[in-house]
Length: 470
Image 1: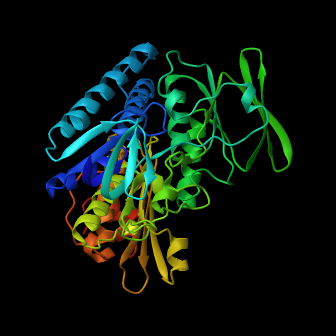
Image 2: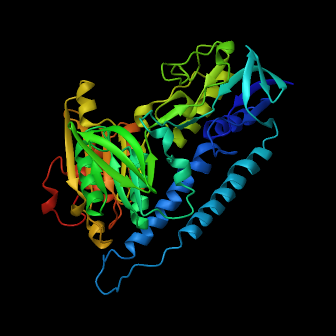
Image 3: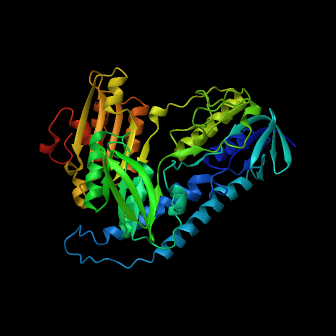
């Protein structure tokens, strides 16, 4: 069978690519499978990533807040948790979205054939899927990535969790050790802590979420520790072992040996690409030192007829950017439009509670880019809506050029930060200034006023302003 385009993969990048190809009327094959265990049609995000994890995070946060005593006049009490039913509800949600947003969508693409199975190149312009050979003029590699678990002494003797298994436990563990203190590790750590587990986080770097502003990392760690999560930074993992029904992690901090015991160990230590066994060398596709597909700024690989998109090309590994990359790759491949993606404009979020969300440059990055920057930083306690909802935990930081006042970065730690960041995204994307934000009327009372207050802090002591001061 001959196709104008063959897509290898079935996740966000592959689907966005298939939809774009269908819109262009291109005869396309989507080869739907990859090496990530647990993924079905729809890929990581809907099956073992964003959708199920954020559902469980929402349920756990609601359960935790039921006894948080935020408001006077309400008698709080710990509710009863049926963890098995929580997981079953999550599974139904995943099944619904997999059908409604992926399987049904795919059936509606008249120019796209779905072929289930693992594809591998057998020549420059031919792939084989379970013995069936498909010929293509152009190809898109969008096979995603899977959990990376480092080699640690004793790991072969114990069972461990990755994000996939941690989303499908049928019983709530009494204790959990999370190895990794970035987005995935912290989300799972707080989720299980909110459900009632004793959680310990071991982070290799000197602070959690080290890519974020230090003020935000430090504040979030303080909040997590206040909730009972034990966090160790600057950790070196030495070995793993069993101790009866428990698992033991032996580690060092500053050269001093320590150990923790837990029911489960969750590795949140990055991801590795699904490129093995695909014979990419036959197509002339080069990989980097870690096995990710190398692409140029137009998503084209070293082979002129092959493009790549999504987690298989490396960071940033976000569902939204994977879809953007997939659509851009196909448009470049089929229309020669030569589109590029400005990754500085791409927002990211950590779905702890409070949430972390960022876009653009940190102040350190801005200085590294030759920008003399000035920062506006305010605590969330300056925002009236934070007091209204009974949660003043948070920080808002704007990074701007000190001369032009152009906003080059926005960083938020607050409830619903992932929703608030989009004003910052537009500010960075369209090169708005601090004065543009100040001049924009914001609804009162809202958490989004925090961005305006942070902008006003460039000129005034906002702690001394009345509500709605222009």
